Image: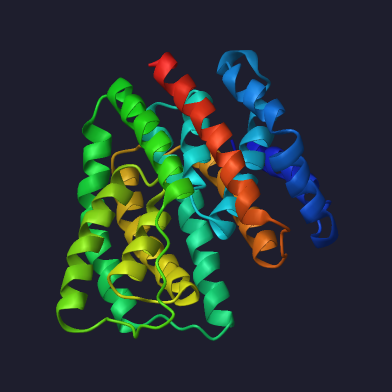
Length: 301
């Protein structure tokens, strides 16, 4: 297995070595704006036993790379990676657990990135992270106990709802307001993030969007600060979810680390490059890909 992992990472590594900062915007535009239909056809026609293993790993890393970009620019990358793992033949619970490796690695790089820019985690962030951690233990246990077919149908519905929410979510103007992180607002946030932790532990997809919405509406925290809080919260509660999935042997580590490689590469490059019209293209791309994957999930169930 170690030799296989080394070979797959070498192949995928060569792909990303050539995706330097000067080429990134062109690659991003090519995938998300011009040739999205190729990925739609490829994913919709996927049969795990009919595809070469090397091709599967490369495809997984590419989807992870795109998800890393999407997570950095708009959020919602797990809407692609979780169903992708299921299409590759993993049982839903194992796909769910495996997806957390990529999330965990990317959250570490995100926290480190904010710290390098002088944005330190606050005590308020720690409170929210610990509350979400408790919730994630409950959510992950529910995800493991639920039947695979039921989980797939729930995931398909959630995917469509979340991507629609991303497109039509309300805009909150907090420019003229002070942050609210003390007293009753802290208590409300702790309860809210416990619920968010349950959702994150259960399914993960789109959780960053709900975190940002909660921080802007309840606490009136700026977008930059909210993203820093989000990174720490996701890092903390993913530890709990990973523990539950690992304890119950619901993680495929080979797939997980290939996915994590793609996640980290996409997130790292996107965070250091200004993608032209990035948010708009991401939304269109996500709507197309997520609806495609949701339909396939539902039909396969």
